[in-house]
Amino acid sequence: MIRHLKTAEAQASNFQDEALTKTVQALLDEVEKGGDAAVRKLAVRFDGVDRDSYRLTKTEIEACLNSVSKQEREDIEFAQEQVRNFAEAQKAALTDIEVETLPGVILGHRNVPVQSVGCYVPGGKYPLLASAHMSVLTAKVAGCERVITCAPPFKGKPAPLIVAAQHLAGADEIYVLGGVQAVAAMALGTETIEPVDMLAGPGNAYVAEAKRLLFGRVGIDLFAGPTEVLILADDTVDGELVATDLLGQAEHGTNSPAVLVTNSEKLAKNTLAEIGRLLGIMPTAEIAGTAWRNHGEIILCETREEMLAEADRIASEHVQVMTRDDDWFLDNMRNYGALFLGARTTVAYGDKVIGTNHTLPTMRAARYTGGLWVGKFIKTCTYQRILTDQASAMVGEYASRLCIMEGFAGHAEQANVRVRRYGHRNIEYATAAHPLAADRQMEETNEAR
Image 1 (cartoon, one colour):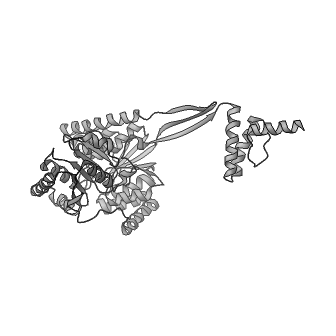
Image 2: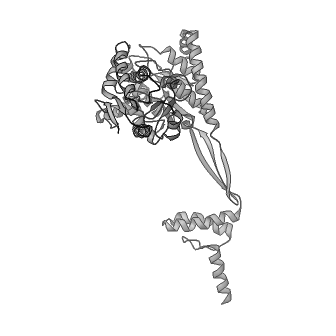
Image 3: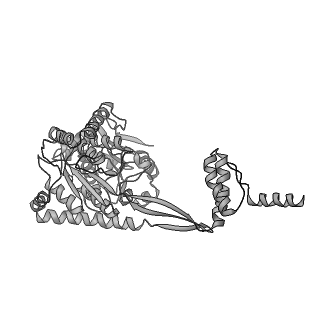
């Protein structure tokens, strides 16, 4: 029997806020109509930064790089190496194919990179430089020709750590722009910013809504909501470890769900006690504590099967598994953004350094999609060719009849004209091509008469 030792006081919602949508749409319209002037006006209004051009110069980029310590640069480069290595391995798993499905009929697909991508790197409250690795670098590994990136100013200036990460990841253009105006400028273009084909990267509610409204005009990576963590644990771990991992993700924001699912009542109670203790010493306790109070849960199950069912129901962005049989959950779990197996790893490793991408599905979207990866920046595009007259005529006969079934005479004629030319058969206009065997039988009958 499943029961709750702690329930969330508030429920995260994926319903759209009409007022937010109206505000964001107005800002998008303003940028589309006003171009660079509108972007500048909004940057002054929201970011407090006034520049003739928001694109960073080579001198500014070099200044940011030079302000980063040797250790900081080495750490950024190490993290990017891990992300690059995994992205390259994933890309290697994507292969072009070409097969002969029927005699003379060739079908294939090619994996074609998106040409231009705009990557948003959030940085208003914290300089989230890891998002540059996850978006800019992954797009470059995919083979995208042009990758541009925007990040808001940090304390009124370009954030040196973010700029360093953007540059080292391979960004072709770097802009000190935040919020809706940044997303709009990349997607819609201005007099000085060429529009992109796809947007990627997380952001606040306004950035997420802007991406949602722009989807269709450009591609996007994911519809992202508040960060989530789910921990599946038994009595092989202790409350301090579990509480630390729950609060570590809760500090992202006051609306971040953090959930423990366990079959150990002792662990559940110990975790509650440890959360109380850690909130007394945690520098970000105000945010993490609010998130835990409003969106934290502890769910007690009797069996691992119940734990699995709860995990698949929740479909969390991040799922940590710390049990006696982590591989059983790996083999059987279906709905998750990313799995973190065993006590030796944690969500923070994935967020910052280990190499898997940290842009992941939220709000139960893990039921139908995975997270950002090199394949998101690649289009799998099919092609076909027919090598022989006989093959064209044979396929054409089937196509002709199938088109007539649907009432598409024009489609049928696309097939019929080829049956006439390559099959040397007399097919009446806008009618279904009879099977060749039936035509031969009819000819034999006529000859017998």
